[in-house]
Structures are given as structure tokens and as C-alpha cells.
Image 1: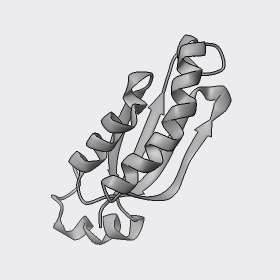
Image 2: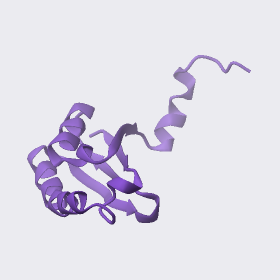
Image 3: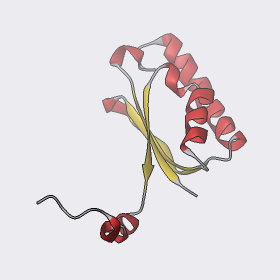
Length: 107
């Protein structure tokens, strides 16, 4: 099943440490995140993890499609107070094995 890295970040004024509304949302959001993932058949491989003083977080997940991951981000409420990026990830061995199928190097 494909793997995706979900990265999110917020401004300091949108941080649960400095905004009471965001704090309440974040505290509810963690359990909602787990429920949304289970409903959409998303499996956490790592995280969710916080880079607390950098106001960022990430999770490595396994899901059927990027659309499912996007639905998860929306249903979990994560996008309500964060900017979110979803990226398909591959093992380095998979990328290296594809080199022969790519156009020749430019330089």
C-alpha cells in the first residue's frame, strides 16, 4: 500500500500554547484524528509527532490513495489551524531501481 508523509505547520498565534480556541481544538483533534484514520483505513507508521518549538508536526501513514489522506486531513480538522502538505514517499531502494527507466541525466 502507498505511503504518505503528512506535514503540518502553523503560525505562533495559531499554536495551542498561545491560543485557547486552538488549544481546545487540538485536544479534541487528537482523538478525532485516530477515529478518522480508522474509518478511512489509514495506518500510522510513525507519528503523529510534534516538532513543538518549531510549530510543526508530521506523520508517516499508509493509505490506499492520496485522496484518502486528503479526506483524513479534512475530517480530522487538522487543516483548520495548520497548513498541511501531503507527499507520496518511496523507499530509497525503489527510487534507485527506477533510475534506468528515467531519461538520461542532463549533465
